[in-house]
Image 1: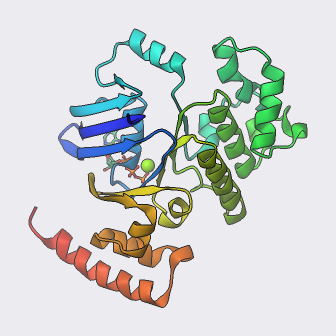
Image 2 (image 1 turned 45 degrees about the vertical axis):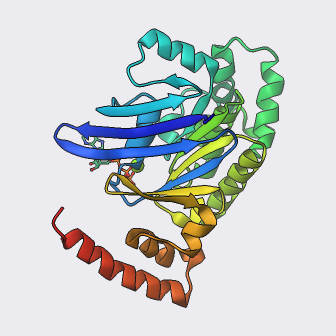
Length: 271
Ligand SMILES: Nc1ncnc2c1ncn2[C@@H]1O[C@H](COP(=O)(O)OP(=O)(O)OP(=O)(O)O)[C@@H](O)[C@H]1O
Ligand SMILES: [Mg+2]
């Protein structure tokens, strides 16, 4: 059974139709990337899975529970089960500015009344390669990369089965980006399912088993990552492959230019 099953999901903001019949599933332990340009609906998809956006149609089944239309009490119950945790782009906004690193990482455990909190926090800080000496610092006293590690540690500490990441490395410099991506690979290899959302195919390609491409609110391809990178089917994907710095080659550059022409034609065509 899928850990996450999204079926025919429609989301509208007022009259604007942002997600159209989106279907996506993630098996236990599977790392799925979602890529798409700005405004394509990636964060809306993430927010829908976290129950922060109310879909106008479709279903979102997490570990057997359809979350569309759950009551507040049912949500609390689902949260207690701790199936899903999340990491967003901007850790400065997702971390409480008044909590030290230690307190931030310990908080999800305290909420659940866990035991041996000290040991678990230290173990998790080591896992994300944060020096114990940073435990007493506030978010404002950390670098961007250190902050994002704190956010990842918070997401890991309760051992969720699925971690949802919305642009987790977009705000980081390249050295920090590489380190967080390595961390995500380790997480995947340890059997945690990932939903990794990014506009950057290069970041997703090394982590995801499968990549779904979101284009103007629709999934236009959803295939094994290597296939998407090596034989991109949709014009938008070809453009991404051609413009990803880590994937770039002369052939990719030609593919990108051809894709750009196709896209101009596509967008110019009547809907
Ligand atoms: N709360 C909201 N109310 C109205 N429109 C919204 C709201 N949030 C997002 N939108 C619109 O919905 C569309 C999809 O937004 P979304 O944030 O999901 O895109 P995204 O793919 O995450 O983009 P980015 O790569 O820039 O983060 C955009 O056109 C955006 O302007
Ligand atoms: Mg977004």
